[in-house]
Image 1 (spheres, rainbow, N blue to C red):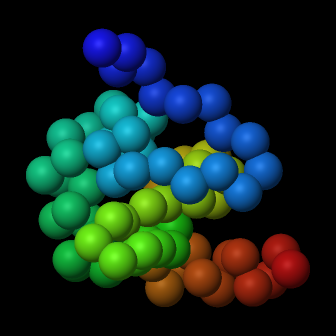
Image 2 (image 1 turned 90 degrees about the horizontal axis):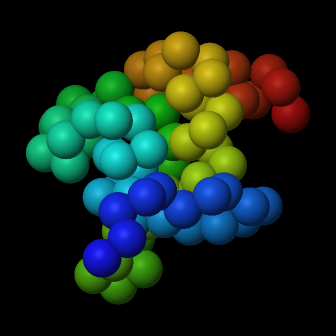
Length: 79
């Protein structure tokens, strides 16, 4: 099975597992960041599926992984 994170293209949604792999952290830690409000990118729920926009994840990582509130402020300022 291929464990390489998918390459992001515009609008691509990836699983929390793939987001964790791209960030080189555990999936459990990613869920903890989401629960604590420290995960910046939007978490998109499609029924029981949870996805993250790969482009936003990449921008968030490049910005130094700020907490959610700081990230939203930065994103609004950039728009």
